[in-house]
Amino acid sequence: MNEHECGRPFVLKFNNNIGELYVADAYFGLRVVSPEDNVSKPLGPELAGSPLSFANTIEIDHETGVVCFTEISTRFPRK
Image (cartoon, rainbow, N blue to C red; front, side, top):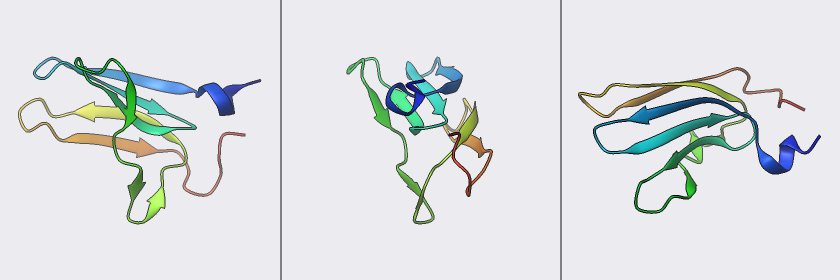
């Protein structure tokens, strides 16, 4: 399997207010695709000094724009 090269997205959420697509990926963490770029970029490469290792869900507060997520494990990667 080439998941470690291609990624393993678990959840996609669309923010209608600003047109961004948020992706929770097991290998690449939180990603965002903006309508201007059409390219996936890291939403936050680190949280409290540690890289995200297994992001698995996203929720968006459409009033404030706050993005919430969960991480299955901070110790064990998917592989």
